Length: 395
Image 1 (cartoon, rainbow, N blue to C red):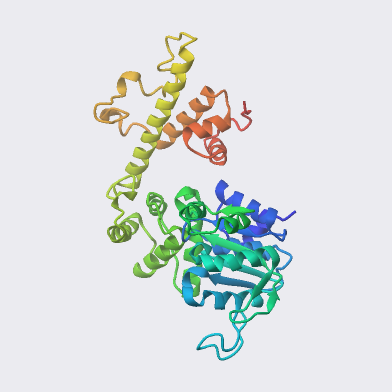
Image 2 (cartoon, one colour):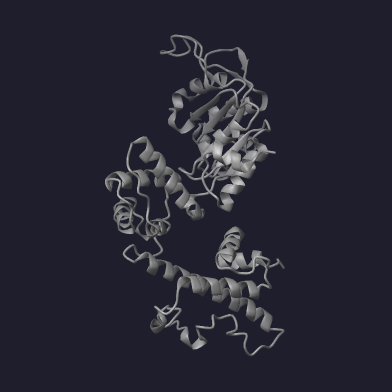
């Protein structure tokens, strides 16, 4: 059995989120099996790193990993690049040339952005996948390549099949095993680790003094959706370190540089809180919104229960003791009256929400985590952080 911690260290895949743990587990499961793998995910999430990790734990790890960006090769020469060509097969073919499949013999070939390949090329790719056979352009001799194929795409290939842009038989042949790499916005708990790694590598390689990122700066960065994913984050970290001349990165610096990026992308609405809010105000508003969602969910459940059970206190028993029912007003979309602001801490609200949600769900962590909109792993960490009973049993 492959050690996941060792695999993560060797592959350079950063993160402790459940989503990344699932990716690592899939790599460990199928890495040593000689089977084609399709890696899916948005542009910039790190699909190539997953391909390299698969190769590193395979039986072919001591041989070549040949990477091919199918989207970067012009349509007219893609077959020549993949399968090679015979001398004289076209004007500039002055000698015989090996293709990528021939070069990758006995090793692994990584076909990045396979959704960009033309239909006529897809037919030949399918033949290689099924039998290992192919022919050079302009040649009639059949060649054989013993190669493991790993493909990646940021497209919805099922939709491409429906549109007739991608062959159905090739799609089903590729998707025997699929590994989905999550977008950065779906694993923001990993953002601090990614920032630290990128910053350390960049400053070390460029002999720049690194003074770190302030916690408030990281919190503000978590409010941005990062449409370019990990690649965009890496570029942002490097740019802000250079432009701020190695100073410790503050919330104000991040705000300034994000404001420069958002208008270019036309994504001013990506932040759930206005950038001019302080991190404390932003976090407070986010938590209050989450409590409102929680309150609505609990009320829905109570309405179902109340059909068979009458309870005079069912309306307010789940509310934090410091907040009375009459204190909650909906006329201006506020959860707590203005006079109460400043008399509580975010930690108190979060702790109360967790305690009461666990109680409501009879200490079922799975249901409580789902209701609170967090992973079970995060809920376990919060239980420990707030000093709650670590021996709470599942329902």
